[in-house]
Length: 182
Image 1 (cartoon, rainbow, N blue to C red):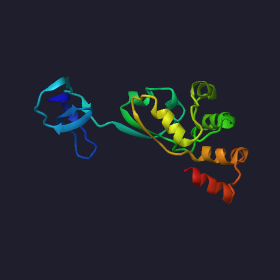
Image 2: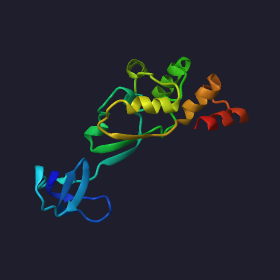
Image 3: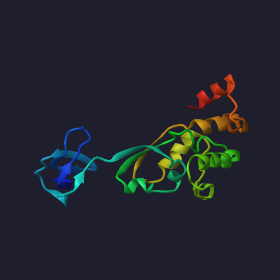
């Protein structure tokens, strides 16, 4: 018996093949069958006239701060996105020293139209290092999965301070220190 069966929708499975009428069955939180799913389910949803797709992956988001306080990560979670990727543009919030928090908020505000005041008010700052950041955001239950890249600009600020903001090149020693952090 399935936990959930989505029945009779047009399945677009992401393989490139044309959509087809079918069912999707879920058990134990995983999709266990697609196509004809004749077994009973604890819950059945009628998807007649609807499209059934896998969750979408948003490869470029700016939830790097929001992920520390927002369980929903809206609007992505409302648009069928099941995985968000952060850090793609090089801006983020780890690693960061307490003394550089406003600097990295200003960097993000310059890249994305997110008010710095909202970031300053919302970000929990329960970390300094990137591994500590990952632990802090993993501790928040989220409606979507996420993948996080180490943001280059913030790494430069962590190692170089104000020189990074000024756009100065990193020394060989600074590059080695950045490599060591990744």
